[in-house]
Length: 306
Image: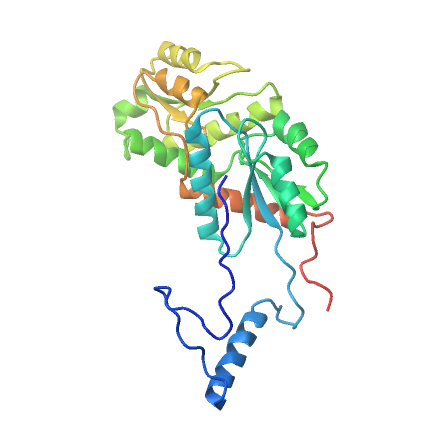
């Protein structure tokens, strides 16, 4: 778990230079020094006011809900992805909670938010479809929180996801401008973890259709477990149709057992997991914004009482 470090207060009247050495405070025994201090204070306060003068409430925290993995690379990758989200939206509280296998677990993250009294949170699943985890596990894990929460949609099929998948494929060797031979004999297997829930599988199938439209070749959704076809089965089916130049597109967030097994089944090239791709970070923020804009009770009001 990454910790957010908050610097302690500077000694009154003795702020520090960038190198850590003390510097004299702005003197208050002159009108210039007094006006400087007043201006600095007002600037900080005005940043929390709406145009009509009411105080802005704190924004709900974004809690990215990852599945968790026994592979240590998964936590490293997801932590770096959250850093990219923070860089895109400075000032937004961004936290991580896992469904299982990794710390922090989601209930622990929500308990920490409860203790801080942060007000509200939006849970954004770092998952690709509305399967069992989104429908049942995440709401059940969040049920004990005192902090008001809203569960956003999972990543799902979205042009931003297709952007990330396409770029990872080109990094692996997929031609930027496919020639006639690639269009005639090429294809892609979109490899995902798999789900027993029809809605979970449907999201991957929709993403496959979007990616096929982008690439101009057939894209077949396949799964590492819990659903058919498997990646090897999809490769064989494409070969039977004369598609021998087959790439595997990794629809996984981070390295792990399933991602490795799917990549090993590629007869040609296999893309890396999506990892810290900027489009994935933007998609997490899009789902957060979408959840806040959705009809129904909001986790917190936009404006605190006047």
